[in-house]
Image (cartoon, rainbow, N blue to C red; front, side, top):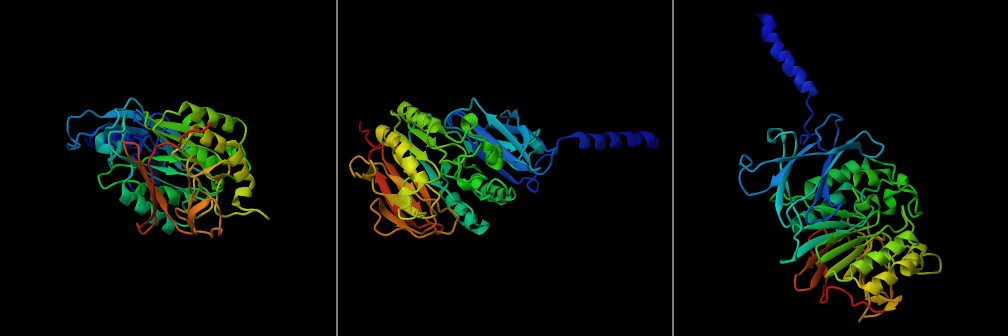
Length: 418
């Protein structure tokens, strides 16, 4: 009878209405990987799409090089559901833990493998540094989409193990959330290698993520940044440790936390606790030893934020040693001489690299600046290669792929000097 033929179709339609919507290539605005904990055993997957009823399920398994229909068992993880800041864009996030160090995994969004429209892969970081590890670094990413795409394409060509991003990501000032759509789309398209491995990011906050800019305003004034990026300890300054071979110390140069006070105290403790790490890099937005933004009657070194960093952070870098410091904000290329106690010290000083010109219009640099070994108005990113034997090779690369400056750090850490 017609009634009986109709019932299965009706039930099927109802099931479709109730089923979570899987994020297709058209629905997905962006996806990125990051770490909240140990990079050798965890990975956090974040994605943004347009549907409130989109799937919050993530499938993952260790990648064995076989077909997706192989017998390797899928594991399922449920993502947390939220929105991207005050917008209605849907944000999904899941942290995968208990992973195997130095292993490759594949993952996809959906309840079952048949639901997944695109499979991607990621690598956990090795427990020990047995072969060279590479990362890229830079900041001030997007004056416009074309400039962002150009440098992101260069990052993609380099296929680093991860990226260290030093703030001013989408230039939304805590207000213009639509800027994040451009940034997320570009990052999703380019932060992936030829073999489908997604490049994780480590991120610092900048003034253009915050309504107050440089005023140390509350996190509520950076609603998109804090909702999009899962930060260790849910704050803008933190450390990530890669076994005993690498530590990254990420700081907030007075955007949602003051430079002095609790953050400076934390930095001293963090540096002390990591004095035995083979490599240590710090990254933040506003530079202590910059290339522009000169206050009246002074140099970039005399700006209030620069002076505060020199007073409150640089003594910890100098006391406990660092491989190099990544600074941003000033929209130029910069490599300093080695600096200690606010003067050149080629034997025991700290190397500062910057100045944040990933995808922005460069500025001019001061002439005859004693602290600058080399500087110019040029878009670039840094490529860093860490060798197991204790040598770091650092290259400055422009959007055309040209290596226009490089430095080799023979000893992995600047020697601490009391």
